[in-house]
Image (cartoon, rainbow, N blue to C red; front, top):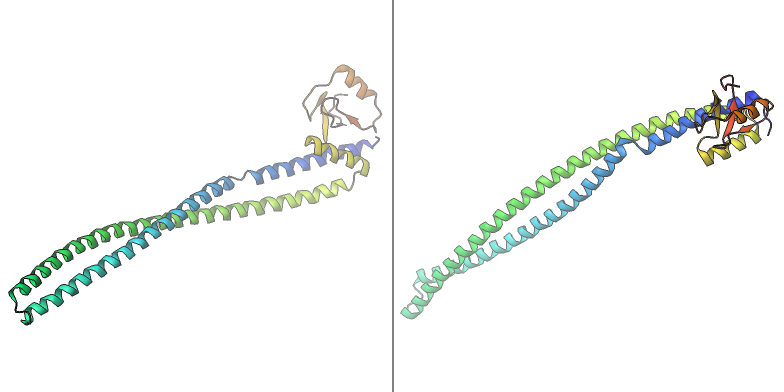
Length: 246
């Protein structure tokens, strides 16, 4: 392939712009916020699950407390009713009186036992409610940190995309100056090796950093200035400049 030396040198400008785009893409993929967002998202998911579990437990205890309080009230109502019968004098039989008094005493003991149950449930419910409050606070704190990290990520991505857009514009302008066949070869090599063209500097290919042999340097010296050369080691386009050591 033949191409004017100046056109070949423009490939170095293109390669530099492509390197900038590659660095920006690497920066985009490796933003520190991405790891933070991943970590905070997992934390948030765990805490959200724990909040649901704690709220379920607190709800169950609330229903259990309500049932226990209802049982206490039912026993109290029955004891009050029996006490009123006893106080009314309607029961006159000694046997019936003894039975009624025994039942009232039994109901009072039952009421006391049930009130102990209510107190125990209330303590458990208070602990469960505190747990819910703590977990909700932790979840909301992580959510705020996650949102902040997402905002920083978006700002960084916007900045990177702005810079990349400017570089792509400059690249398009440079590419428009290069013949289609030379540009096509460059792009093909870039897809294969990451860098499509490299400078020959001081007898060394700047793409693979390999020093060329004397025989290879002599071959390059003898080649026409418009011949498009390739590095024998890395196969990239080898661009000759005043710094090539020829």
